[in-house]
Length: 261
Length: 243
Image (cartoon, rainbow over the protein chains, first blue to last red):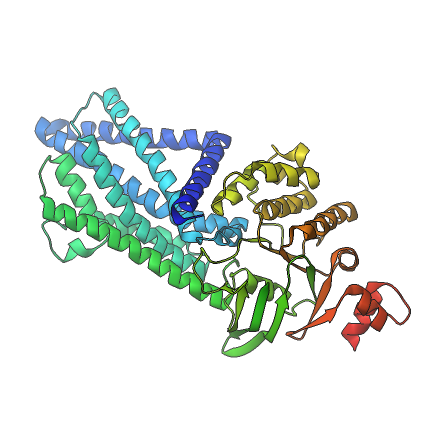
């Protein structure tokens, strides 16, 4: 068995079990989709209501910013949350140690689980955003390929943050409130001006959100240098997050606290 | 062969050293069932967790046919199936068959379906194969955990108190399956307090006492040596603990 075959089989196992659980707990899934949809609709209706006194051009840009902002925040939530909540859930239900017996370790298992959730979320958003716009009679053009590509970078960077937070969960066990606090940090990172390059561009998710805004909302070109930097930065945060997790895993194994929750 | 050299575990608890397992060495050959026996807190679970890589040893090495089980790459490590202590080895939201498929997938396996069917049949789980595990009794959940570990076709099988809290019928069926698995020529290590399990399935006993491990022979040898005429293993074991 080589790494690729093992990786594919882990992804298949995660994808199929995810699908089974989604189908089994369909009510939760349906409520989640409805939640996403209503958020999108109410953002548009809310802006329309508030923006009745401003020019159409301003309102249009504002609405696109909000929709893409909400989309970005959701993708960050999926990237971070799928890793952290999965680890907490596995620890609480007791199968974390069994998961860790996977020959390749727990990182690929968490990664492929997160990937499954990202794919599902992306597909849902690509269906729900146009549908909500249709319902609210508001339209804007989106380059779907760019949206998918930059979403992958945003997710990868968020996933790295998720692994770093999970490292804390491995050691300190109950970290939900800390993870909740991180939401505010993420919101800050989303709005800080990280384009053109400055010290804020080094922070996770900021350049990815900036690039999504520039390209998708304002239809501006950001240049290959910036795109290359964002790709490398996303990869770097992902690798750093995984490395932090592996260090914490080693520490937990040394202390014998891996499965205690 | 599984070779354990100078393996030990010491925890640092509030600045104090707590010796869980004192350094020990032993070789474990395939095709036999090794039972780790000893009072609570003697270091049995810690040793099992060191063997499956969930706890890092303070000193020592574990090799399987010369391949490093702790520090080696994942490709060189033997396939290890484990049923760990407690009732939470499986995903309660998945069915029996889905659990087996899921854990085989996590071990990078495919083409395990015939083995899954075989073990479900042997463990009497066929009628529950499409039942979510949360609806199963504690005993049947333990059987599912064992079915998952066995379907992996692991080279090393580690069972931590597999019959704890189970009724005699389910405990017996688990014993029978473990006994039957001897023909698979795999490394099998079981920790247990169940003296009936030892009488029926154990080939070699390793005694844990105060963090010290000592291979002490077969159940028959122990009964002959410490039984004082009583041919029950429990009597011999109690005598051995008091000595």
